[in-house]
Length: 210
Image 1 (cartoon, rainbow, N blue to C red):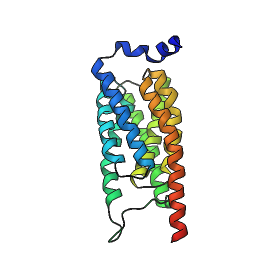
Image 2: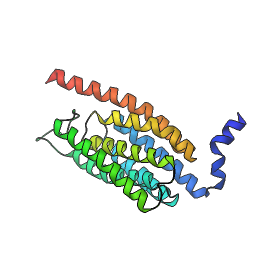
Image 3: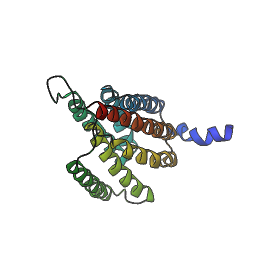
Image 4: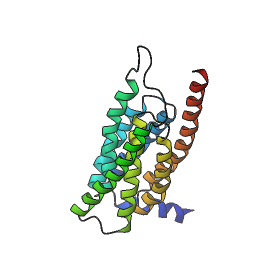
C-alpha cells in the first residue's frame, strides 16, 4: 500500500507547496462545477471559472500548452455559457436543455477539425511535437472544445464528449505525473455519466408535458 501511495504522489516532492495547494483547490472547484452541471445549476460557470483560471496558471508554468489552452477556452466558454443559460427565450423561460440541431452538428465538426489544426500548429511553433503525448493532447483538446461549446449551449450531447475525453484523460494525466488531476478526471467520468442520465430524464419529462 505504501509503495502504491508513493508511486501516485512521489512526483509532488519536486513541486512547490503553493502549486500543490493551488492544484487541489482547482480540482475541488472543478468537481463543484461538474456537479452543478449535472444538477443543471448556473453555479457550474462561476465555480468553473475559478478552477480554469488556476489551471491556466499552473499548466502554463509547467509548460503543458495543450492543457493550458483547454482551460483558457473553458474560461471563455464559461462566460459565454453563463450568458446563454440565463438568457430568456421568452418572457419567463431561460434557455432549456435540448438536443443538437443539424446546424450545431456541423459547427461541432468544424470546431473539432479546427482545433486539431490549431493545436498542431501551436505545438509545432513551440517545438512541443516531440512525444506521443502530444497526439493525445491534440485529440482530447478537440473533444473537450466541442463538449464545452455544447454545454454552454445546454445541449445534452455535451456529456458524450465529456465522457470520452475524461476516460482518455485519466491515464494521460497520471502518466504526466499529475495524480490529483487524474483522480479529478476519474470523478468527472462518473459525474458525466450521471449528468447525461439526469439531463436525459429532464429532457424526456419536458417532451412528455409539451
